[in-house]
Amino acid sequence: MFDELRDLYQEVIFDHNRSPRNFRTMDDANRRVDGFNPLCGDKVTLFLKIDDHVIQDASFQGSGCAISTASVSLMTEIIKGKSEAEATTLFQQFHEMTTGKTENIDLQAIGKLAVLAGVREYPARVKCATLAWHTLDAALKNQQDAVSTE
Ligand code: ZN
Image 1 (cartoon, rainbow, N blue to C red):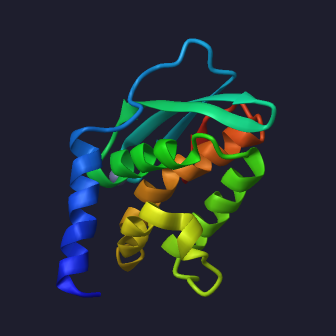
Image 2 (image 1 turned 60 degrees about the horizontal axis):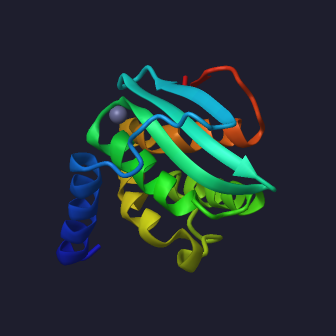
């Protein structure tokens, strides 16, 4: 990866960590799932408002490292307005990207999330990046139990 690109990616992660998007509780959410990554101590509570199989609103609360915060912030931004099926596809793509199976990835669809591709070089950080998405997956399946990456 070119250094310039790497700098840009880091800038996006720093920005989302410094000022996370959709960082709030949601009173009218119809999905709420807690996620925990014991390896790093990242905690997230994801709120979704799903109407007619479309994610009308997404927000989160919690605390964690820069990667986990940036990941959930980017995720809430990108899934808003997506159908449940589109969000499930994004989850699969994100999972493949961060675990190194890049050949099936639709870069157009994944967009800004590509900034997190670099975590696959750091196996200990992969769970920081995927915590948000495993929590989303549980919320989409309407599971109420807390999600743990371990
Ligand atoms: Zn972490």
